[in-house]
Length: 159
Image 1 (cartoon, helix red, strand yellow):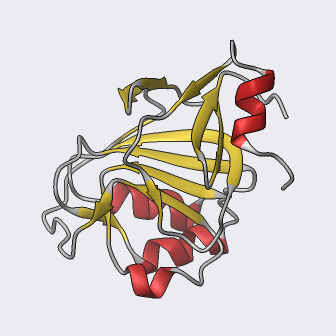
Image 2 (spheres, one colour):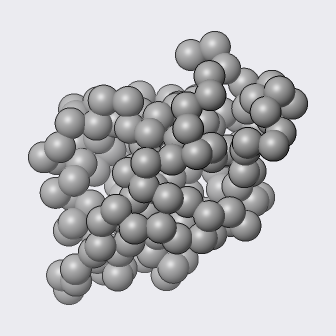
């Protein structure tokens, strides 16, 4: 991947939204790009497990909203599923765990931070929804670019 988010912002300033500060990459890939698949969770990650484990993620980024509840929704096992099914990255409006184990898995993983616990009771998620966090609106089907400078979202693929 030869893109840089700063260059995209310079060239297409009227077509990009920049995710606010506070999201860090914990994954083994330093950058990613792809079409967004959205999922809204209620603390528990069982629907995200099914998505990452069972669906082809070639050219896709999963964007997860969990209202920033302080539970981890992605760890080593989900990152392995994401890698096995060719997902380029995951962006979480929430927290992750297993940071030591996931640094060698070549999938980008942007999140607000870490938390060692997960939410055990199974709850339902919602797919292909629109939501807002980090100062931007994110829609299923939008396009995401992320690197060491940050995360940007566009309506269509531009690079």
